[in-house]
Image (cartoon, rainbow, N blue to C red; front, top):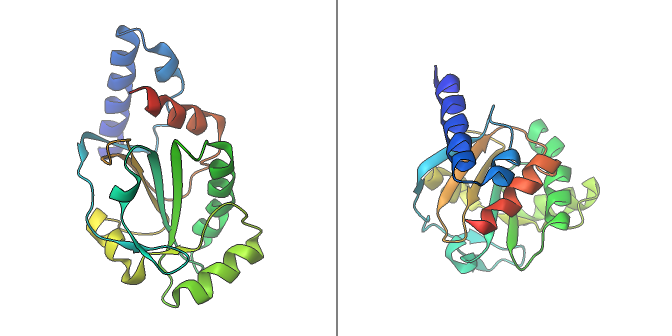
Length: 181
């Protein structure tokens, strides 16, 4: 039932885009099977995270960019499979307009995440951290991997629980279309 409702909402949004002459955006919409569109958008979270260098940071520090925020862990097989796609996505999007944050929820933090990313051959993602999963919990994350998409105003417009090929042409086109809204 919930899956059917998601599909109906996505198709209605696509129909509205088409009616208003925005067919290029509708055509580049991501696969609707797992993506949950938040309408109205969810508010900006207040909880901080740690950068790779150990500094406290907030999502609000990056307002003005489309933000793709992913929660992962080294022990999570779907996360490990997904990380190269996020790395490729980060390389494909202009850094002045997009931010791809991959926050490790591993208990041993940076000492575990940074070497793991290096071993995987990840070149563009930082070993940023969500200690004790505080930000993930504030956002309502129920498992790993989970990804949240923020618009340029810092609002959550979509989320996805589970693995996705974030660097697929349909996702890249959809992310770029968010700059036009």
